Image (cartoon, rainbow over all chains, first blue to last red; front, side):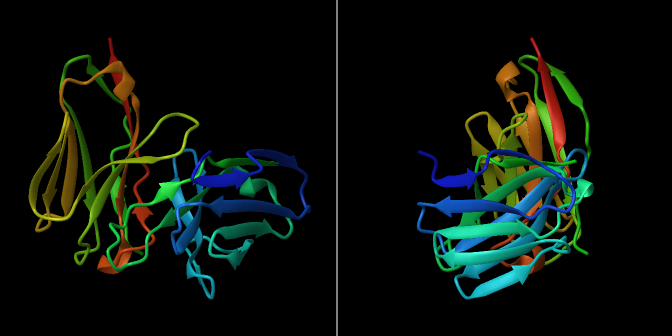
Length: 115
Length: 112
């Protein structure tokens, strides 16, 4: 089983629908991240969390919200999906600062299509 | 806004050649640098990290860092068709560990 698991892996939805992407990890890392990837634009950070009580906006947080339900779970919500949120979404984890290398470990991705 | 710049490619090299991938970054206080490889439709995976000026070698891969020039590169020796992928350069903003800023990636194609 993957250390960082994302569900669903693929989702097609309609404009205006609420969508939740879920991420769970078994690596025991404190830090979790949500990125989106668009062709030609690379990976862009949406939200990140350094522990259960710490949530931070990234570069492109508008239109998104997150919830850190537990150390191992970090979900991303689109309250009212729009077509330009069609993208490949990645969850990632990393160790905390002390003793960590800074390496990110990625989930397999969730492909979202908004019609 | 901190930036990480890469040539988008595609970079095409023949099998057995050296592939050279380049990255520049704008944040002068950055202390750690990462190269990720991403196959089409897959998630990024770390292949090299470098923290000090100079070269770091790992098998066929060599990362080179020049902090004064804000430049980091990745050399792939004896390139193989299996090296065909997009290579992403990543840097933590503000010199801290944690979230990474990624370049847009360079697509490498190794021709048999």
